[in-house]
Image 1 (spheres, rainbow, N blue to C red):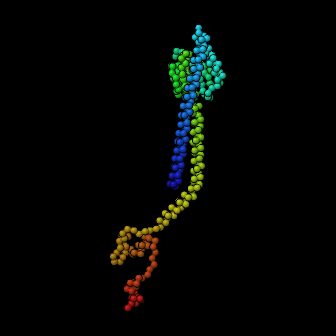
Image 2: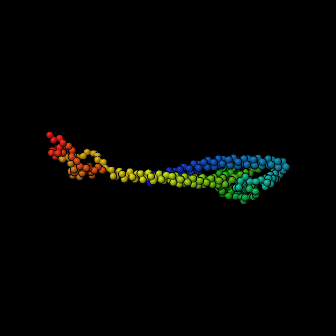
Image 3: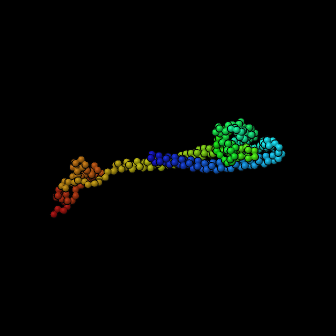
Length: 285
């Protein structure tokens, strides 16, 4: 039984080790995917920012007398371009916004195949972190809450000429989903394979374990039947009786019989025969 417990413990350790290795491997791939997403989002923001600046510079020449006209024309052309542009993922969005007072005023957003305009929000809500960074003139990537409060991975940048911010983002849940599925599959397959291995192992090992158990039981039974004499035996120098553990003196044959598997048969040695039955002694003169 103890051996079986040890085997079960070993198999449990195998399941834990397999799970740790699988989860570690998936985590490494997840981190690599996040780095690639950061890079991809940053490239989108950079290319879009340069495009916006280029269009705005061109429109400034056309609307040299109307700076607002140049800005409106730039936004209109961008919206027209994005209507023909497919989004980069299921939850991917590109947002352009301006800061007006303590409000974030969205110019437009692009998600999948639609153009939309989110409602303006206060800068004090503790959300829209990527856009706040962009409107502060910064550029980079961040994990944080978007304007809806969802956790996203986002790249952000500032378009100096238009004095607006641009954000390209994707929900963290979308990035994690395939890896959560992968971990689930690894755990299920690992447990299934180890369980099958456990079943096969026990089917093979059970007869061996049973035979070993029977052998041990037989040995224990045999050992209980075997009695050995050992230690110092107090023996009378005259009558040759032996003193037992309780202090009683026993005939030597009785003591040996009680403390071993030996059996006695009786006979007379030549010396005793000559002494007791001299008339029958072959040594009689």
